[in-house]
Amino acid sequence: MRPDVRHALLALALVASGARAAAPADQFAQAYPIKATPGAPAYVVPLPQDAYSWTRPERALADVVVVDATGQQVPSGLYQPLQSVSRPVTLRLPLLAVPPAEAGSPGPRIERSTNGDIVIQPGNDNGPALVKEWLIDARTPINLSQITFPPTQVSDGADAQLDNVSIDVSDDLQSWTSLIRQATILSMGRGGNASDVSTVKIEGATGRYFRVRIVSGSVHWATAGEATATLAGRVEEKLGADDSVRQWLDVQPTRSTSSGQGVDYDYELPAALPINALRLKRGSDAVARVDAASLEGDHLSESLGTLVVTAAQGDDNTTLTIPAGRRQALRLHSATPLRDPPQLALGWVPDRLVFLPEGQAPYRLLAGSRAASRPAWPIADALAGLRKQQPEGWRPTEASTGPGERLAGEDALAAPNAPFDWTRVILWVVLGLGVLVVGGMAVSLLRKPPTGPREDP
Image (cartoon, rainbow, N blue to C red):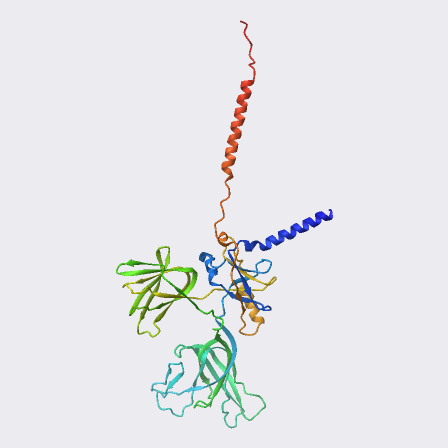
């Protein structure tokens, strides 16, 4: 092959590959540059407000992707923040003695205070009987792995003290679940060099309250709150730092119509935003009560609740939390006429996309497409793997977007043109050819001389 031909084919291949890399951008309405600090293993970026005007609610944000500098998509998906993180703890907690009850008399009453603390009210005057039951308040639900008891007093002259204990768990001090039916603990006396055996291993135990009962033996733990047990396990710590901040958008009614004795106020939103709260501010009316609903066209589609504001509310506003969902239009109905239209603010939390920085930076967020979709990347699995490699409590690095850049605009959302129907054309061509063939045959027959015998005059 000649060198100039090889060069031409190479150039053609480069052009074709560049066109393929840039093809996704041609199918999207809007692009936003992503500002991110280099070097992070994953990034999370919130969708800007105007991106919602290009995405269709029925597509559930599948028409939002992240691309690198060459236009190729990088792994991305909707971000689901961790609600909590599990961390190991070791707690040293008091053993609360439950007074023994005398035969025939009511036993002690065990209750919880308003903050959940254990309150033990004896049922009779405590006698000299040994305590057989102890309670432990972990203050928070703990997934217990082991519990270590204090040593007990060994009888004079004995080398060791053996005791068997059972352990139960509860969340309310009423219903108990058995964890250990019988475990042996050992306290050494003056003989031998062996150490005490006071740790009991536990599996599958999660709860706040633990009950220890002496099955056999007699422990001499302190009964005035000095005795302590050591609990080891893991607790779930709620994460609030990873939650998105609610934003507020003030909207004005686009029209008002009489409805019975009241008035309907319709609000057209700038985009189908994921609204989760409504806030109403009182105008010059002493009191206002409105019923909120979402609109689909001219019809009510979902009742959202009632908002009431009065002059005695201090800041003159009230907030109604509603199920999160994308809504394009709302209606407030007041059963009584209002002096001023309701002043409505919409609370919404931007959706966030998490992406892995493959390819070449800088990255862009593309939004709005009828044809293109984001693949089902295994993002959840990727984040789970990263969390195992990173320090406890790790989360993707925050990124932001710059001003939007128009790409295909409305053309990316428009339905594709119907393919040209060649059937009619082919049919007319065939009919025309048929007419020409028949006409040619007729002309040929008319021009052909007669072949029969001629008669003499």
